Structure formats: C-alpha cells, structure tokens
Image (cartoon, rainbow, N blue to C red):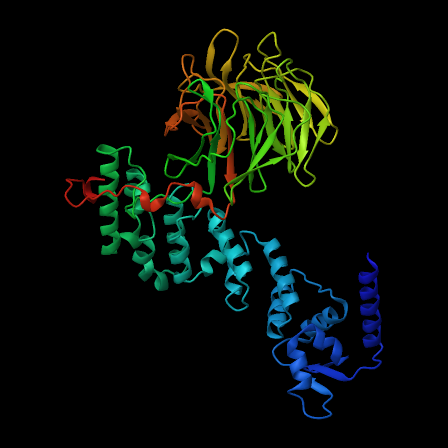
Length: 588
C-alpha cells in the first residue's frame, strides 16, 4: 500500500470510529424509526444529493433529515460505504442496495452492484436481472444480461423466470438473428411452453410469436408431426398460413435449389452463429498462403476474411484466446518460424508477440488454463520432443517437461485439464503412440497406443473422448477415425470419413466435429465434412474457397462483432415463391 493510500485508509478509519462513537456528528439521518448520527462533510463527499440536502434543502439549524424510499439496512450500508469506501454486496441484498444507491445517486455503489450481478448471471436469474434494469438503469448490466439470455437460450427456457416474460419481451428475444439455438425447433417449443403456462391469456399471441420462428429451417417431418398437431396452431388461421408458406420454401430448397440453404426469406433466414470456425493459412498451389476463411455453421457457408498484412505460413498452429487468434510457428517455404502473431478480432489487425524458444513447423498447439501450449515440431534439422507454453499476461514463453517421443506432424487437444498428443513422425517412422501432459505435475504419461499409425493426423476433444482422425500410416492415406476413452484407457474405431486426408484442419462447432482441407493423396483439397457422434456418421459440408493443406483451424466465440465474421444475412439470396408450383399443407 502506498503512503497516500495508507493515509487515506487511516483517515477513513478515524472518521468511521468517530461516527461509531457519535463524536463531532452534526446531523442525523433518519430512515423509518432508525437514526444514524453522521458527519455532513463525509456524506457530502459520497454523493451530491447529500450536499444539496444539507446546503440547499435544509432549514436553518436542521439536525434530523428523513430519507424516504429505502430501508434502514440499505441506509446503513450506504453510510458505511461513505466512511470506509467499502460496500458489502451479497446475493440477498444486491438488487435492493443497487436501487437504494441509485435513489441516492451513489454511483460507485451502483457500479459495484452492477459488477456483482453481472458475475452472478446464470440461466436461472438472467431474465430477472435483465428485467430489473428497467427499474434501476444500468446500460452495461442490461446489455450483459440480455446477451446472456440470447447466448444461453436453450438453457434459459427450462427455468422458471422464462415463463414470466411478457409477450413483448419474448417477441423481441425470438426476433434476434443472434439467438443461440442449434435447431429452430427449440424456438417453437419455447413458444408453446410459454403459452401453455397461462393458455387462456396467452393463446391470442400465438400468431405474433410464430412469425418470429424461421419455420423453413425445420424439417417437413417436424412440422407435420409436431407443429401441425398443436391445438394452438390448428385453431389459428394466421399460423396455418405461415406453415403453408414454410412448406413451400422447404419444398423449393429441397427439390429445385438445394445450394440455397441460406435465404433472405424471413422463414428461412439463418440465425447468426454463436461460434465461427476459422481456417488459417496452409499450403495452396505450391506455396504457403495467408488466406483466412470463416465458416458460418448456421448458413453452411464460408466467407473470406483474409487480412493481407499477415505473412503466409503453413504447418503452423492456431489458437483462440481472450479475443485473439494466435498463429504459432510454421513454415513459409524458406524459413522455419519461432515467431508468434496474434490477430485482434475487434480491430482486424495483426501484432507480433514474444517468440517461442524453438523454431517449430509441423507444431501442435492447444489452449489450457488460459495459456497456449506448443509441442514438438520440426526446426529445420531435428524432430522435436520439447514443449513450451505462453502466458499472455506476461508475454513470455516457458519450457515444460519434454515429451516421451519426438513428434512432428502430430496433433493435440485438451480434455479434462490434460493435454493429449497423438501420432506424428519421429524422423524414422509414423507413430502410433499417444501421451498426455498434466500441468499439476509437469509430467507426460504414455497411454494405450492408437489402433493405427498416424502422421498428418487430426486430434480433437469431442463427446468426452479424444478423437484421432485421418493421417498417413507410412503406406496409405487414411480416412479412418478412432476415439479414446480416458476412463478406460482404450481406443475404439468410429465411422470413417467420406474422404481420406492428412494435414487438415480439425475443430468442433455446434456439437459436430469438422475437418477441412488437407491432402487427399493426389492434391490439396477444399472439401469439408463433419461427424455427428450421436449417429456415428460423417456428412459433407460446404467446401472452402481455397484448396489447401497444412492449414490450422480454431473456433472463435463470444465476440461483440461476431456478425463481421458471419455471412451477411441481408446479402443472402432471396427466394421468390409467388410463381412457383409448390406443395400445400396437405402434402407435408
């Protein structure tokens, strides 16, 4: 503590002691039947309201001042804050204290309570906190609470507070492009749940609420078996008209224009994604590229977001941390990098940060506990067994224990507070081995080897397992995949990819495992496919624009400017159905 802050703390302590001893007090604050002896000058320093009360609104020689509109307990806390600079904010008093502080214009307490409530946000209370900001104005808390509702909507709908929303509030929420739902079915089910809570009052709102559903994003089967079987829908002509229009749109998309699955038509307008898959750099056309593409999973489209200021690189690692995308190591056809650059997603600018100790291309990169880990790789001479980690707060790299194996062209992931690294090349052979790192002990531990040797592999944590996908076994290119269960220390085969590939990007978005690009045995590719663990099946997704291998992928989320990296909704093609011969409700 500095001399100045020590002096201030001691003064506060002295003034508070005098208050508690009721010495030199020159006013009494009265709330209901409770009296608080105070020093006017201390309270004047706390809020301009008390200064006006004592100097402008008081009659001569007035000693007792009645304060309406709050409880004695809240007045006690505010007076203690005026003397000590500390407010005792708890779960049970945060809202009441914030209202009282707002009433008396004690903005420091208002901000403290706002920060406290923001930290307490959860699916059970976010709606209540958001509605509270209508009575106690706090723009930042209001924005955060509303954003929490939007981001966690699938959890919020199961909470009691959801049923207390007004129709105006619910309509506004459902109209949001960035409402985070994996399927539009969730929106429909939320509406029917809300109406069923007080059906005699709320059924009249069914059409207004249904108009906010992107009905054509549902399956025809769901509309037929669920939506049309609902009594609220069947009794409302406007709802039936909407279903008819949706069925026409679905029919047109499926039969005539299957590529137009993102439409400007309000019934089929995809919502904004909560997370974006980035594909960064790689090898394309015989040279490294600096190309960056962003995949909008809701629209099933890629857009090019390349920033020309970044140097081309391949065989690098990428990681998303604290609003930045980091590119680690790699190779540009002439130099093996130890450099690390990060992309500021809010300003679209690149900055160089501290370099690694080792040059690393074919490097493995992952994030654990707010740090970036870089393992193995090739420095231009040797396959590496060393590993190091980066702390963004200090902008420093530090070595950790070396791996049991020297690995380049391996892949890694984080699961259950451990880093798993699998496969790769040790300079002599493609590896079948795998190991994990525990930060608590700074030790690597070997696990059961994979079923196949895999170099140029993709490894990712998914569905509580570690998935090892594709690669090269020393003889053939692989499309096979396997999953490791850390509880049993065993691997089991899962469905194979549609296309064999190595040196591809791999990530998980919206509970699906995506692989992008890579080398398919004859050429670099732009093909993308995804794996659904629930049905153990791979399906093809929209291709990238850039043919590339040796790229790296990461997923970005929680950005205030997420729309800048998604497909512009108003630029999506509009499907005019007026002149089309399409099916009616009866044919769904």
